[in-house]
Length: 238
Image 1 (cartoon, helix red, strand yellow):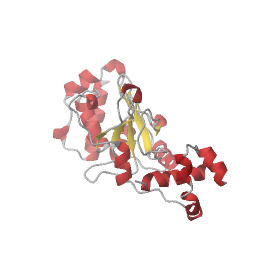
Image 2 (cartoon, rainbow, N blue to C red; image 1 turned 60 degrees about the vertical axis):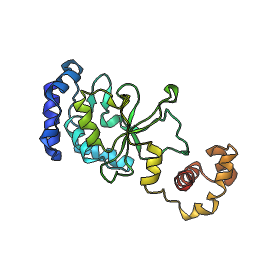
Image 3 (cartoon, rainbow, N blue to C red; image 1 turned 45 degrees about the vertical axis):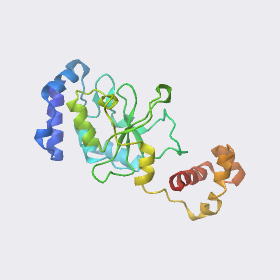
Image 4 (cartoon, rainbow, N blue to C red; image 1 turned 90 degrees about the vertical axis):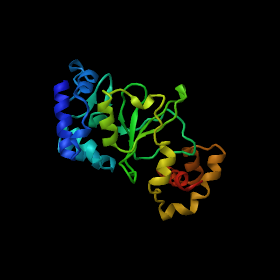
C-alpha cells in the first residue's frame, strides 16, 4: 500500500540518517505504487539477512540491509527489489569483452521489467557505494551499464521516479560498464601457490577454444581449480 510504503521509506531514511529534504514526493509514491500492487512485504529477519551473507560471503550495504529489514523486497509490475530469498548470482544476458567467468560478487537485485538490476558487492566507489548496474541484453542491442554509484543513491531516485526504469531514458548516461569498472576497482582474485605453475598454460588453451572441462582434463586439474585460474587471468591480463 502507498501509505505503508511511505511509512517504510520514512523509517528507512531516518535509520540511515538521510536528509529529509531528499525524500520522494508523496504523489510519486502514490501514483507509482498503487495500493493494489502491495509494494511492501513484512521485513526480513536478522537471521535471514545473516544467513544470506554467510552463505554468499558478502555483506549487504547498509541501505539495502535496512530496507530488507523493513520490507523484504519492493514490488511494482515486477520486483524492483527481490526478497532476500531471490537475491542470487546474476544471470548474464549480454556479452562482456574480456570477461571469461562472471565475478562471484555480482548478484541480481531486482527484475522490474526490461532487464535485471544487479549489484557488485566486491568494491565501493570512492564517492559512493557498491555499484548498481543492468544486466544488458544482446537480443535488444543493450549493453550492461552502471546506473548508480550505490544502492541508496539508486533507491532514492527510483522512489522519486515512482518506480519507473529511468535509466533507460535517452538522456541518461550512467557510469560506465560494470566489467571494466570491476577490474579497475575490485581486488584481483588470489591464486593459490599450487596453481601458479600451471596458470601460464591455460591462456593458450583458451585461445584454441578449449572449455573449462577440456582444460581441466588436459592439465590434470579439477574444474573449480580451472575456474580459480580463469578468474585470476581475466582480472590481471590486459
